Length: 306
Image 1 (cartoon, helix red, strand yellow):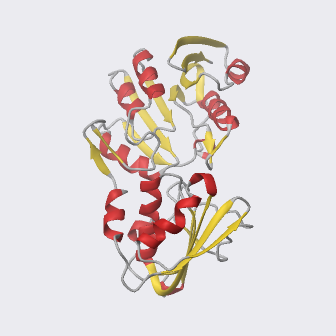
Image 2 (image 1 turned 120 degrees about the vertical axis):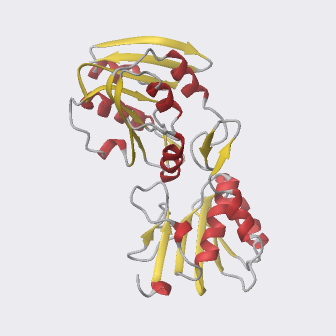
C-alpha cells in the first residue's frame, strides 16, 4: 500500500450483478472481522471504492462522507442499495455533498457513481454525526449502525433482568456494546467472560464500556471463533437473526449449536429471542434440559443445560 492512490476498496458485499468491486479490493466494512478501517484512510488514498450502503440514514451518510474524503481526485465511488433500504435516497444524499451523480437501476437496487467534488460540502459534519459517542440515555459508548445503538434492546433488558447469578468461565455471543456482559460480570463468582461480536464498532464501544479485568473482548464471528469445546461454564446471548439485512433464522440456530459445543457437561446457556423465532427445536436437540424463564413483551428467555 505504498502507492496509496492505487488502493481500491470495497465496503460490505455488493452483489456482483449490481456493482462489482475491483479485483483484490481491500475490505473496509466494520461487519467483516479483520477488515481495514475506512476512518483511518488519508485524504486521496483511494483510487476507487464500491459500497453496499447501510440502510440507516446516519450510518449511510457517514460511510459516504468517509468514502468521498478518501477518494483521490480521479477516484470513483460506486454506491448501491436496495430501493426500499436507502437506495431511493442515494442520489439526493450524494448531491447534498456536492457530487454530480450518475444513477442507474438494476435488480431492485439503485446504483450511483460519483467522483469526489472539487469542493465537497458537509463531509466533516456527516462523519461526526456517525462517529462513536457517549450516550447519556444508555450510560455507555455507542455508534450509529451498531445493534440497538440508541436504546437498550428490550430483549437484552429482559435477559439481564432474568439472569440468575453466574459463576465460572463464560462467554457472551454477539455481545454488542456490552449490555449483557455488565449484567453477567455483576456476579463476583464469574471468573472470566469472553465477549465476541462481528461488528468492530460494537467491539470498540464494549472495550470502553467494560472496565473489568475478567473480560476479554474479541472482534470475530461466533461461528468460527475457535472456542475450545467443553471449556465454558455458561454462555449468554441475544443472537442476531438478520444477515445482510434479511431475516435468517439459521443464524441464531448456529449460535445455539456453537454454545452447546463450547459448554462443559452441565454448563448453562441463557438465551433471549423474539417470540416468533423457532429456537425450541434446536435447543431440545443439543441440550438435555430446556426451561422457559420468561415470556413477555414479545420476547422469550430460556435457560438450557447440557
